[in-house]
Length: 200
Image (cartoon, rainbow, N blue to C red; front, side):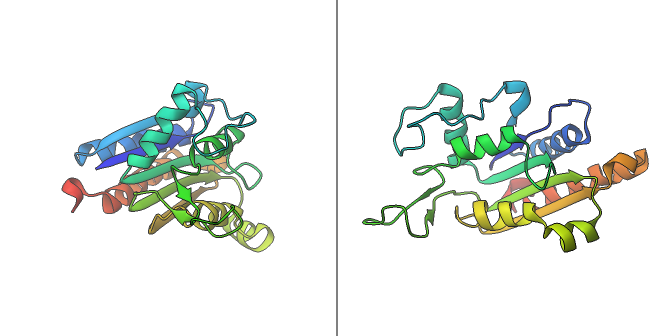
């Protein structure tokens, strides 16, 4: 299987980096091909230029590479922190530029873009791993868990990915080394369960 791992966190010493590396290592140990992208290390430009959003528009080489990989991926893993109930801006920009018409979705003939798109992604599963310093009770009752709605309903659901699983690790700022190790082990188990060796 081909699996894309997308990481969005500026600090290479962060738990997010450790989670993403753990996911990638588990996938490789299971025999899968991994396209690993640290968006900050790549200096991925999140700004969508005028005209680039049109289907068939010419794309810069790095954006074109991301589009090819995400279209060919059998699975997708996203790792990022919860910042103001949103992904970091660099990851939102990645969605704007890569999860695009003709790659991740399309509209029926005669639909000018006002209807519900048809998902094109071939990935059978998408996993999202988040970190947060907000309690689960406050996240759910005060904020309504916006990241769940964004990734499950607004992105992967519309783009045709049938299986979605998301985990929020919290509270990171007060976590112990033992807790972080348990989160890494949980990440490995989840990745291995959704993308087992030989696709079983």
